[in-house]
Length: 204
Length: 272
Image (cartoon, each protein chain N blue to C red):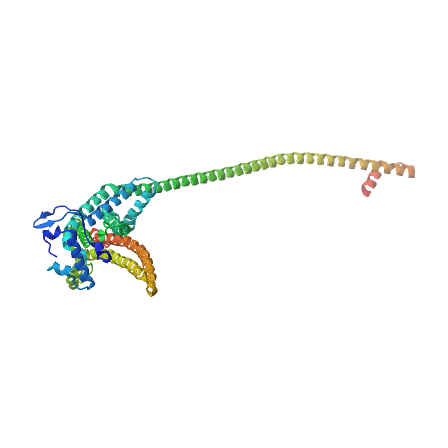
């Protein structure tokens, strides 16, 4: 394809002619009269290989690409990427905040549980202390009472023993008197005190 | 007859003719063609969509969700995983590549419906080698530029894989150099070929719908043509779905490869 300015500014008719030549070639169809009229031009399979079209398309594409790239660089990417980042940081911030609050609540619950356990331990201790103290008081009181009772009993026992001894002494006197009286009644004669004593002691 | 010519759709036509600008003996024709018009429409459309998406609300509305979805395809799926945190400055470039290709590809398919209404200005700029090649060369030059700015002459380490025996270095350097230099070619041809191929196949099936339908009009045994016509129509519907996928995929592949190529020079020698 001749890349002269004339061809570049060719009319649509000419491009159609060019295309039809290309198609004829691509399809293996014999050349039409129109193709022959085209003359010396090279065969083209696809209209895309017509390099006379390249310059304008390439430059236009570069201009449009550049404008879009600038928009992307300064407007779209910062805004869209920024929105996504802001959302992600908001979400992760919210999650970490929630996690912090949960940890705080957990810590408070643990502290409350510890306090409860401590209070319980203290209560148990107070109760056991009170029990121990009461038991000690009871034991002391009982010891005092027991000592007193023991003392009383010992005194009583001593009194009883004294009374018994006295009674036993009286019994001997009664026995001597009785023996004397019996002997006197039987014999009509009062025995001597020494004989009666000896007799009673011998029987006792 | 242009109507049944599958290549007619790729013909660049002038809409507003401007005088050529002579640059050193070459006449640069900046006329507004159907190709340029569609590029302008695509750029405007994507700018409007992204402007609506760039409201920065904490709870996104529909357009913002769409725009942020596109953005995350590039930022969270490509750039950050491939280049790492140092990839942030390249997001606008990769995003522009992706959105431009995607919009032009999609408009090429969706607006093709306009042909039914006799609208012949619809066009697919990504089906033009001039445009895919420009974009590929632009990407290649960007990689070169970033490579030299970031690494200075250390850029040439790119062609010497680490831990290679000394005798192997010249051979590997040549192979690496060739694979580096053909990148713009493969980038351009991959996008161009996919789009052109898809459009040609769809056009051919579309022409079958008409020609087999016309055949069926003759009656008799030729009525079977209606069956072929219906089958072709079904194929077009299915192919449209496929082409929508290809439109997205090719934009994504171009952006992904540009990211990979940029990563090689950004993280050169870091074994990233």
